[in-house]
Image (tube, rainbow, N blue to C red; front, side):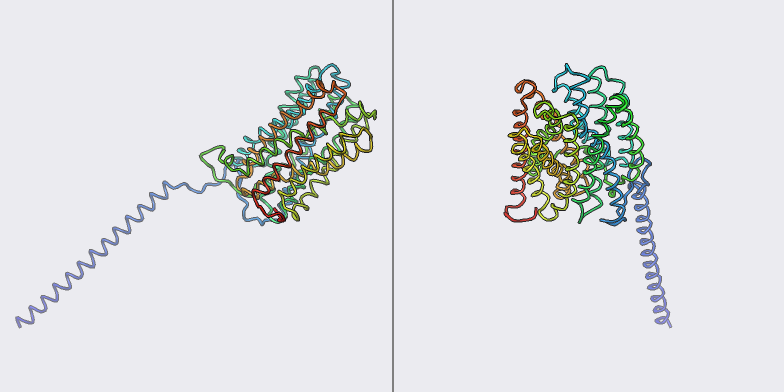
Length: 464
């Protein structure tokens, strides 16, 4: 009996020990579980919540398909907005001819060219803040504000026809700030929506500037002849406000870029590929505007053609540029984007040095305008595509903004220097030094793009 009772007591003690152990383990597990829950709660409190974008921020549209229907709506929107922003820049030659011959006959050509120079130059240097805004603010709002600034600038310029410095500030600087807020999203955002047809899509967008110049040039000429420069500027400003306000509603970014500590990342300048593109762009834009600004006056002063003939040359350049910017997108699919870009700048230089320089005949001027228009626009249209190919589309807005500093440098050197050469070396009538200046810089640009091509791939025959 005693042995049995001792065994029972032993079993009872063992059970109690097991129960205590199980209870202790359960309690420990409960404590660990509670500690994990508290830790997770603290992490969820300190971790940044995925908040809804504020009203001025872009919303991610990554769920929408690439190469889809909405991408083409974005392309159409960008094309329409560039039609007026860059179209006004491309048609400034009409204003300059009138300023030079009628409104400010005592001003030097180099002084008058500052309006057009700053239109393109400031637009490019302001590309850096415009690119930053596109990463942090809804691109629809950015482009909408840009249209308002452009419209206000032209309307104010219409009351400043008594002094050229006032036009430099309004029609030149203020207008270009607004144009930059339209230009950067229009050329960078469509690349986010395409992979297979990216070159064609961007080509159609930048063709808008040629389309704008195509009809804005004769329209501006007609408005100036019938109503004067003041009302020409006012009407253009009102149209820009109305059309841009509607088109900007569809300029939506597909990707939402995460905020960085660095507002501007200049590390891309350590990449030799970027440096070659940058220097090539400086050279190209140095020579780019001479035909646009000087061909009309050359046709009148040297060849003896009418004022309407000179205006028609600008129309021909813009029409050919429209075809060229779309066409180079398809050519780039066959030859490669870098190959096509180098070819475009090389042929553009030939149209200046081979067709324009040696001849003083109306027919060769038309031929030069056609060839130059077909190929000069390809360089501008392919730059965003090459950027997207080499560095991706995630931060394409800021990279393009940095690259367009090159366009600013080239513009600030090119157009004023071209006018100064005509005034001081050519005595206002000999255009040959100016033509050589433009053609040589365009030729140098093609050489830098060839070096870029070799750096990317040393294979002679390859689509790059």
